[in-house]
Image (tube, rainbow over the protein chains, first blue to last red):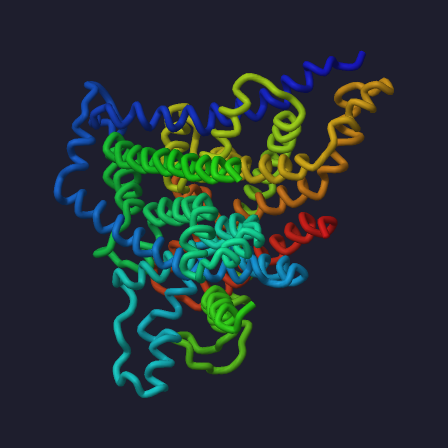
Length: 286
Length: 255
């Protein structure tokens, strides 16, 4: 007997939704619940329920980690945007035959182990690394400069690892841009700046928001960037999370910090939805 | 392209590839420190091949990657066919969950899965790594296969059904062959993602089960050894070949 269509549908949809509910939704709800519990002597969590974990996040020590991590991630995001936008624009206006190759060249680092790439950056910035080597050879310095374990090193590492995450969504939205709109704007007398400000920028807003989202959030969490390039003085929120879960064993507090990241993710996603809706609505007006 | 754009493009590409080039060159450099060139050597690769711990980590990594890629491909492909072919309640919610999984920072997923595994009292190791890696690969497979199915005409399936094929037969004989390049690309991408992941693995593995990125992490923290260059170069080479293959599969008949 052949199974009814319903049986296949139930299996296909059920398996995917079951997996996502069990391994995505449930764990995040557990983290949310955990963040409201107290630390227990056994190391995990226990009653009573409390908001103390969130209050503790407001402690100046942690606020400082958050502020510094946010600043680092924000600067890295800005650099990615400034470097990535013209690059994606060039990519989108390259000859169509060339594009798959140029795109694959961006995708390769995107899929390469980011730890490997952070380690590669370390090789450039180390006291005996390539950058110092070049500067010494050029006679610009006579002592190796300290590049590692600075906030700048951390930002360079983050930009290096996350730049493809910015380029790809920007390319996606720039490629969809209708060149006739730009021609129309030119015919109406708009200069390059006005064309960019009133046509290109608003229409690529979803790509900008998506790119910033895909750079900023991981930038907060990549704890090994903090370890390998930032040293112990420049920590990211990711280092805080790692320490609370794996070293201090203060899970409820770590869970609260993680929930702040989830909150940011959801806020960003809402922003993305708004940007996309505005572009779609503007498109419908045409 | 304007020449300024070309220059900018060239600079970005060098920025992306220069550190990797230095890394790979370093793995063949006889000098133990810095980048002064002391002659060509394969010593660092040889010492990797003789390092029992690294070999064990490599075996573990390949096993986790193959298992996770396979499970993610099965669940993801079925799911993509389901999402494409049927309209059901909660479909939008499911798509939303997929996007959130895709977007969420690794560390958030790592923490939440650790909490789940500890809550379920699962022993941390191969099994938990398998579940975790399958979870972060799943949206990539589902969305890749789903995108491939978007351009595909459901009327073909209806025709097969009218000719007497069962639902499963119609999907197996028509939908799956059409989606095959995307399915294969999804598997390759998942394998690469799993092989490359350090953050999630760091949280959900136990003390007795080490994978390559964690090995690199501890080697880097213990101080730089030239063997790390060799190990990192090998991982890069594997990722590179898999990505190029996946891209080729996804684009070869789109021209």
